[in-house]
Length: 499
Ligand SMILES: *[C@@H]1O[C@H](CO)[C@@H](O)[C@H](O)[C@H]1NC(C)=O
Ligand SMILES: *[C@@H]1O[C@H](CO)[C@@H](O)[C@H](O)[C@H]1NC(C)=O
Ligand SMILES: *[C@@H]1O[C@H](CO)[C@@H](O)[C@H](O)[C@H]1NC(C)=O
Ligand SMILES: *[C@@H]1O[C@H](CO)[C@@H](O)[C@H](O)[C@H]1NC(C)=O
Ligand SMILES: *[C@@H]1O[C@H](CO)[C@@H](O)[C@H](O)[C@H]1NC(C)=O
Ligand SMILES: *[C@@H]1O[C@H](CO)[C@@H](O)[C@H](O)[C@H]1NC(C)=O
Image (cartoon, rainbow, N blue to C red; front, side):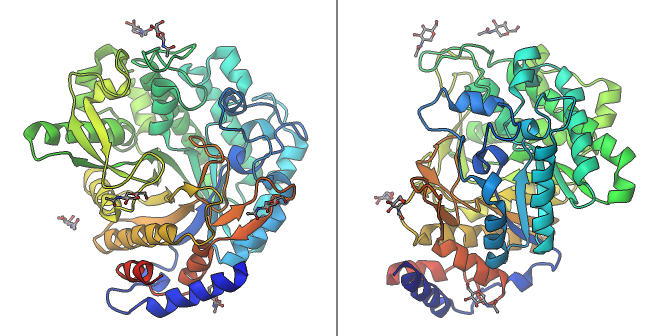
């Protein structure tokens, strides 16, 4: 039944799509990469098998009531089956991350042969199916042992440990991996893990609504962010010195990129939006491109913002050969300085930014409408402000209640809108080179556990075999990638009203 109705729905999409303003895969450069993504803790499961040890995410998830990644999609055992689904889908690239503690259980020192074999096999399987691997080195899963030993990312000792981990990855996998992202969505990682406390390792200052056992929301996000930039730059330097000539890959850094637009046309909201751009983009992009933090941040944070030595500034500047963007939503920015935002009684990142972020339209925290122009403006802003660096959209997608439907038309509408935005940006000169849907499968989610999912494949987490079933979005993506689906931005609206 399901297959039958999927088939007809798909046929229907093909029929309603008209020709005006349409675009196809072929309107993008041939070497542009379309893919889908997952991350190690969210997809692999098998957390205590074959020598893997806990990361801070294992520890953190077991303190929440949102479930955990102990089993997740069991990608560790099902990777062959999953790569086959990717190949059938027509994916050109797959983004995944390497579990540090699966590869090097003590964080540093001996390599785990079984962990090494798993990633070699996965990469080989992808390559054999013509799928380009895009590897993220760090996706929220610090070895717990480093959190315990020295506090993880808030200690500069992380720089050396991260560089050594990266060295192992480049050496072992670099002949087959040409695209490396060092750190996943570093901006929101620093904010959610060290200012707000809702991501691992869950540091924050206590407030009326939410208490953390450790942390300082007014200092730690900036210290962690500083160490992320230095760890990235150190790994990047190593790659260039030791591997690049032979392996010919490129290495980038990624940030979470809200679309930002003023709440009103008041001068205050406009200035607050500029400030938000400095805090949410410039914080990491300005050092990577120009070697130092934005002036607004220096002025507002004073001695709480770490300072780059001249040598560090040179190291960081130019260390990212591309910028990875994680983009989901566009928000209004409303001036709120000097009033503290989000959690009253706490001085945190958003207090410093002096701007409240308000979801646009009918969007809520976990279910949002597509606002494609938001991404188009982000790409244009990056082009103009940061010397038009190569960009990969490393995540973009739409959450829906897990298991609600295989007929995920709102997700198709969302994805095609944003792919159109990327095309517009490219036509206006943006050097965007790839687009990855989050996510390939329904996975364990950081903020919503198994309640909301983004997958183009449904995973039945109650089924002992964790059966995967294609959603309509997967057929849509296949059709788009094989060039049989033209995309007309207005077509889905008509499709929706016809169903
Ligand atoms: C955070 O650190 C700053 C600077 O060291 C200090 O002034 C402040 O009291 C600390 N805040 C908390 C909540 O510990
Ligand atoms: C958090 O800690 C503060 C200070 O100790 C206390 O006043 C507040 O009631 C706590 N809030 C919660 C939600 O536990
Ligand atoms: C907003 O979304 C909800 C839930 O999807 C829907 O019931 C409601 O009609 C929407 N409101 C508007 C103004 O579109
Ligand atoms: C296109 O690029 C030009 C040159 O950078 C810029 O001036 C213009 O605003 C851009 N157009 C859009 C729609 O972003
Ligand atoms: C998920 O798997 C369980 C156990 O095999 C089964 O009872 C259930 O019907 C499945 N759910 C869906 C939506 O396929
Ligand atoms: C293209 O994808 C569609 C949608 O899944 C599929 O039905 C069709 O057979 C594919 N065509 C080719 C030429 O691969």
